[in-house]
Length: 312
Image (tube, rainbow, N blue to C red; front, side, top):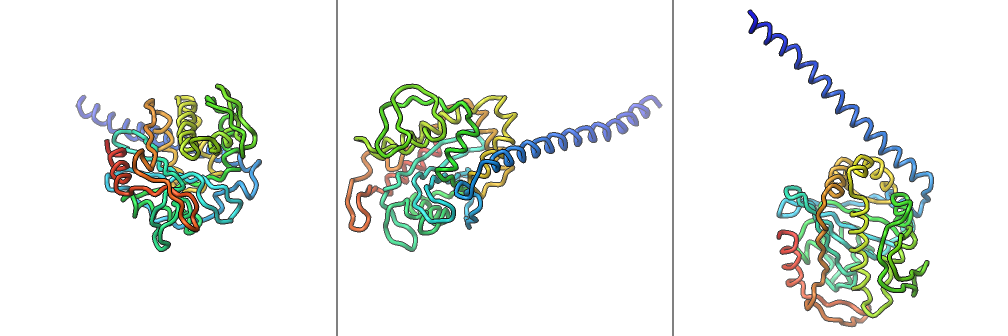
């Protein structure tokens, strides 16, 4: 008799426990959505049509790569509104869910490659010719890697994004004076950069190393943003942060995937490994009629380096 009573009590307790569990999940989900919308509304107060990248709808036929990993195509553009523009920044963020690791590859915009349906041109022109989908096809054809998602941010949006997320600026060591063709100019030294100053930092290229130094600084900026956002307190604010950046970014990534990857990105304490394409000793400087100065790259050597980088 006692055993039967205990079994009945257990059976009665389980629905109550399940109900509490469901209420907790519902409460957390509801609060996360509320925070997300708060972030969106906060940004929409200050945004204008030129800054709102998310109003352009792109077709993108992405999928996971052959290793089962997620690759996000990151593009920076100086386009205004719906005008077509070459991609100023081309990066691939690699995410391995099993290992919980992120890696970052930068593709130099002057890389001279085959663009499907358009012969050979600088890779950054693929964006102007066919948006992120043609860029995806170009990277797939040349480097045999699939991209599941894309994210595009224009420069005006980048400035506002940095100011929203980092009201006290991003701490960066500016290695030299940077003044030619950037506004505002930067002085050397460790300092906190606001949105406009960060844009100068990641765009400057008028020195001896040119675009190579610019790509390196872009990777430094991504690492600094990751490191200075990481932490338990930031993860708790993640839904609002995702909401804050959403109006400035055009992406096909679902919000749920963005929250999950954002949590993984910020909770990991490991450094982000980086790669630059073309790798050293895999290209020659050329001048092509109608194209100007290009990097004529050894596609096979760079494809091998990319696959080794993301799988090791």
